[in-house]
Image: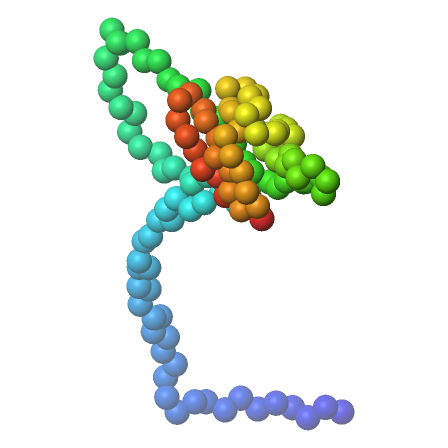
Length: 126
């Protein structure tokens, strides 16, 4: 037969005091870091700019140019450069022109191209 449990009265009264809840600091995250997939910086949203509707705005088309390498023929020393223009890879020799991009000069580390009368130096992408 199990032993009977005796209740023992406590000598002090029980009391419960809840802890004060402190409000946490509020913060916001600013995501203006470089996007590793698009290779561009994220822009935070801002208020729309007021524009005059009477003006016609002409935007220049943007172009994405990357230098990804070159090959050479050992006998003729002619170099062929791999240039990516707007996501499409092209093989270019010196003075070749593709999509308004003209290859001016090149080395193992950099190339110089001309686009819309602007000279651009590009480093080899690794």
